[in-house]
Length: 420
Image (tube, rainbow, N blue to C red; front, top):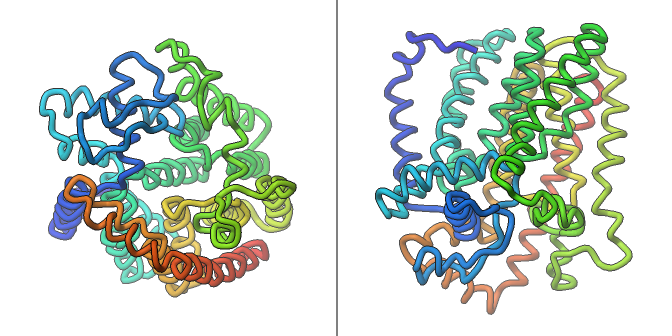
């Protein structure tokens, strides 16, 4: 999807402002746990070691503000390989953690910018009023949640949803192979987009023919193998020792909490795992998605906006039925729900509520206090001191804010499965 030079010139000032803002805060801040995992993963990859293990983070970087040891990366190999590249290209010659910090976030910041242009263009092509399309651009360029998760936190969900949207756009225009490549790349960064595979296959089936289905399936599978499995062979990593991804799949299903109603367990039982006998709830998202796809299959699936409607609804179902969801994953919803809400429903309120509720949750959850570890331990020390007296209050508020989130999500799903 091409962006004209004239458009770039017209948006030069706000574009530079957004890049500057994200670059400054992206250099100084970062989520203590996740970023230290990223730092360490980049280091071990350059040493020829599999990033799927337990590593002495504090000793590696000789930094007292680091954790003693941390697990390696919990994602497929492409992100780990990028981290290794950044470690070699940035940290090794500079020895500067701030430079390393912002370099890791570079793809996420660029993805935020790209999403602003691409989502605006899709909205315009779908007949949205010029003022609303322009509003979409500025919303994505300066949205606090987008910037917080990407530039502050350091997570790369904006890159994941960017590649997913590119796949959807190409599929709707009949560019089957390129769509399959983008889809495989998206699923190789984080596995969540793989739940959209039935949607993509059904779209091809309804609008093309058997050969095109095979073309999409084979391209996606082949690309996914290259992106996600081939690195294990090339670098000699042991596939079966991948913690949290392959060798311990239960990890993905027995956690309970985060941005879900199941976070009440931490208040009631003092645990972030499902109680014994209730482990089946960790798999609730599977039949829920199957039922969601069945209901959606009764509606049209012939256009780009149908793909976006189905994709947004499916990801919302996943978000609401998993027992553990991190607020960072909500970035996968925002561009898709925005397009459907504004292009089809002609409403802004829904997308505003999504990012506001999520951002409020992050503060109640205490994550912003973990973003200053490169500068000072005091914000995190304040949170720990606060929790000694008021942690139950924070847990209650965290649960309460998730209630309207669930109501909002199920109302949205109800509308989309009725073709609205």
